Image (cartoon, rainbow, N blue to C red):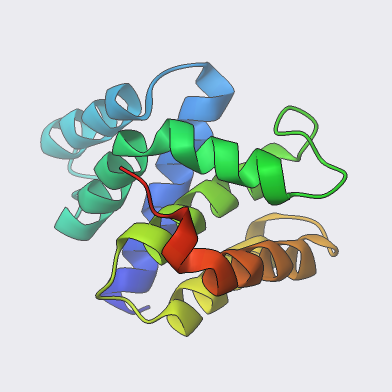
Length: 142
């Protein structure tokens, strides 16, 4: 598995865990880092995973606002927790990380949806992130 692919999967898992626990992503990230340093069975948390989690956290309110605005027929609370967190991660990387090609971000998010969510989720994730890609210049606010 490519390093960035693995980093995205781990970042998604951290966002998902934070959502499930009702904790901040920073708290869960710190827990993961601490566990990786004290338990040899836990792999280290990579730099790109940390960048993705911290980047999402810096823009979390805006990202949730975007998802809520453009997810037709879905509120954030009603959306499956897996999809919500895949979209959060994908939206952050798509809108705020210029180094990663948009097509790669969308494809990786769709792959996460295929692996972790329902049969309908990949097309939902693809459609919403595709819309963000079209609107990207107008979406970016700090």
